[in-house]
Length: 361
Image (cartoon, rainbow, N blue to C red; front, side):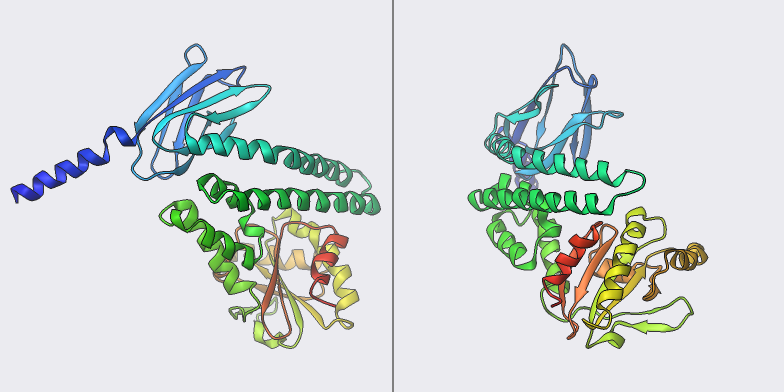
């Protein structure tokens, strides 16, 4: 017993030894506040006052490297991702450059990747802003919105290509960090590449999130049969996915108070009218509205004039199984019942036609 106690003490001291210690040296010039929060997600959150524009967080890290964040306290919410690892980490903020990381190996590399990605990200953000401006006009000019949306698609693709290039060249933790934001929009074969590439970080929370994205994609958009369902329609009749076998089926996950879900509906109506007969095409909208909103759900369908099948999954059973984390989300299923494509977020009609047209000929 005495030996076991001694061993436990030794192991505890070793785990908190100097080799596991970190110091985060923060400097700020022209920042939006005087308090900095270091958020060690799911573990702790520490806040310090800036004194003369500087402060320092210290501690020990049990498993590393790990992704955390650091930034200004509310109402600013201005922050950056950072890698928590042993050593002296540098975080500098200026109004002109924003946050910049350095000091340790992974943070230095992560900042280099941020810098390499910035031009394509800025381009995509500029086009996105232009599209929002076009969309906000009254009356809305559909042709203008469609034209800017094409530029948005092209800028996003260039940004994605650059990110993929950097991921391939960085089979390290910094590479894993830049993989996470694009994971849920990636096809299953790309996710498999990432899961294999970053397996050395399998104990990391962020690798586990990547693995979950792959497992969901493998189950739902890998060209294999998708999980079936049976839910009530607006009349209470039970509707099953299997009832539509032999057709191209677009699953539309939405809810009444989702504005972009409702704005997407007119585009789907136009596509549905064109393709229902000519391309053997159907849509099933799956609402996740709660029972208290049952009548609002039915009223919204009438108001939006949606002509296809509508079912209610108030327990979110199916969206949870499909890993739906944002609305609207569309999943395309081929005539054999196999999931082939996931589309997240609002699309202009032309953009949606192009994405679906990659499969529906």
